[in-house]
Length: 98
Image 1 (cartoon, one colour):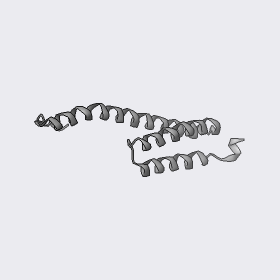
Image 2 (cartoon, helix red, strand yellow):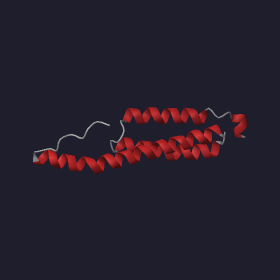
Image 3 (cartoon, rainbow, N blue to C red):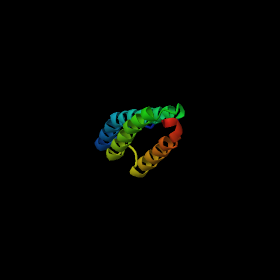
Image 4 (spheres, rainbow, N blue to C red):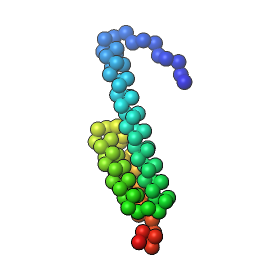
């Protein structure tokens, strides 16, 4: 880890540093949630459980869209993640889905 930066001097810099701390924690929390939801989709797909995979996909897509809307992740990143998850769920063979 790099050494901590010297304390800021101007009032605006102090305020920005103060505002950044909770935002960083909030963004980190949301990103961790996205990773967990994505892993749930991958797990259900690996178990070849289409109903559970679709339910997990729905939750994950909703969370990813919300993160993109609020600016936590870029909209193109959100689209890419959603596309890959949908492709993964659609890869479950239909013979095993029945």
